[in-house]
Structure formats: C-alpha cells, structure tokens
Length: 365
Image (tube, rainbow, N blue to C red; front, side):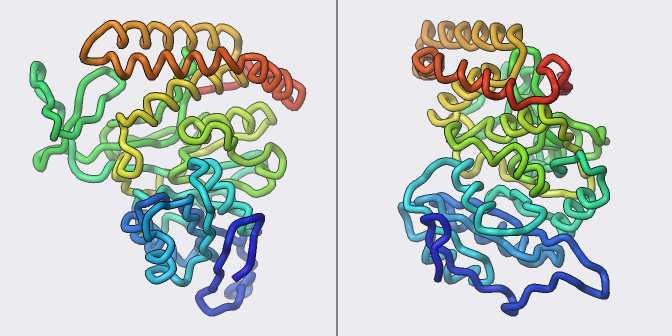
C-alpha cells in the first residue's frame, strides 16, 4: 500500500507489468476511473466490465467515504483494480479527481458506477480521442437507458412505487416490458436559461447524433490529460451535478472541443446511486445551474437562470404538494446570493484565463 495525496491506495496490476507497446505499436496509456459511495454492488459490476476491456491499462476505483463495508467488498471482489480510499464523501467531483490523480495515464475514462459498458467501450473512446484533432479535449459516449420505457398515458397519475422519467417535452415515461429502448445521453448541451441537459434524452435508441457537442457526460467519457493540465480538474466546490458541464465551459473558453463517439456504448441505470428526485438532487441541481452560469455564461443567460429558478421556487413553495421542493430551490438560490462576491470574482478570473469570448461558445442550445 502507498499514500497518494492523502488517500490510501492499493495497486495491483493484472500481471504487475506495464505494457507501453503491443505488437510493435505504441498505444496511448488509458485508465478508467469509477467512483463508489455506499453501492459496492453496482461498482463491482462496472469495474469488472472495465477490467475486461483490453484497452483499459488501469482501472481506478475510488471509495468516496462510504459508511458501509464498501472498501472491504471492493478489495475482495476487484483486487486487480487500483483502490483509492477517501475518508469522507466530497461528492462526485472530488472522487473523480482523486482517481485522476492516482494515475499517470494519457487518457482518463470516467465511468458511472451504475453504468455497464458494452464490450469495446474503453477502446472506442480511446481510439476516437487518439484519432481526433489535437484540440479535442474529450469524447463522450452513447449512454442507453437500462430497460424498456413507454409513455405514461395522459391523465394517469404515477404511484409512489412507479418510477418515471420526464422528457424535455414534459411527458412522463415509465418502465414497461412492452416499451422501447431509449437514450440517456449523447453528450451535454446548455440552453439559453443556463439549464444543462443530456442531448437526445429519451430519444429512440437508434438516433444518430452529431459528432460535435458542447459537453461530455461525466458518466461515460474520455478526457485528454493535456487538456486537464491546461484547464484543471473537476470543480470540487460543486460537490455533485453540473461538474462536467462546468468543466466543459472551461474547456470551450480555452479553445478545446468535445466530440461524440456513437460506438462507445454504456447501459445506465439512471440515478440508481443518488435518486433523481432526492433532496440532494433538487438542491444541488438548482444551485449549481445558477453558479455555473454566473461563472461562465453571458449576462443574459445568468439573468434568465436566476429568474427561472426563483419562479420555480416560489411556485413550488406556494403549493402544498410541492412546498418542500420549492423551499429547497429557494434555499439554493439564497446560498448563491450570500456568496455572490465570491462567484463574481470567479467570473472575472475565468475571463482572464479565457481565449474564447462567452458569447462565441456554441452550447448547442
């Protein structure tokens, strides 16, 4: 065991030897990073699939301060992986950064612990990035929702035990044996109100997406090490949600690009780790949407983000059925206001580092 920046690490390669060259051709060293928090059952499944991919030279699994027996389970079930143990949960960004720091790989693949990669996933991302122009910082994969989904009939009220997903058009989708396979994401876009969204959310699984996209999904993507050296890692102050969107903004404003690789496929059990309507999701999603807009977006987008968030909070708080959610949104907005001087200082700092004006960034809206 050795200590990496305060985290306890146990590293055991498959045969203990690095292989920088195979069949006479030098390959780009590639590492896969998976973050775990109290869900070793999901994480073991994802890590085993990554370990089975011939393109993965190293798999790093980060336990993000789990309160259960995750560390022992991970140590026993996936001993081939590099295990990084954090003493507290710092959110996805802190966990992913710990994994990135624990490897010297040229390409770092981020994989959600509740996602299962298809065979060849890592290689598809790596090969796409290696073949791409030098200004491509990241390649985002094709994320397919696990199971089959159907539209909930109009007028049907979903029960407390019935899982639903809301499409961009407001319609609700629910699991159905007679339904269709649908997409989770082919990358990230940001609209004129500052809302980050999965491109092709709930679109048919055979949808063909454009190669260019604003941002990458932190759950299924490959990042170029040199790009991270240029702009920095994920922002740990966001804790969870919008951390990949924020990094995409930094990359874009430094002249880097993101591309989509349709042949890099994962199946994702959406929000199996944190819950799509948990208090954590509602609060952090509302706060981070406004914060990221403040740091990076044009002022018109910032104003719309604040107005829309305030309106959502007020409407929710005035209704008995959504009062709790509305109050969470208003509290998140209040947190942004309290720390406004710090956010404005960050905005000025980002402008000083940028080479691309805010208004010239194509967010896919």
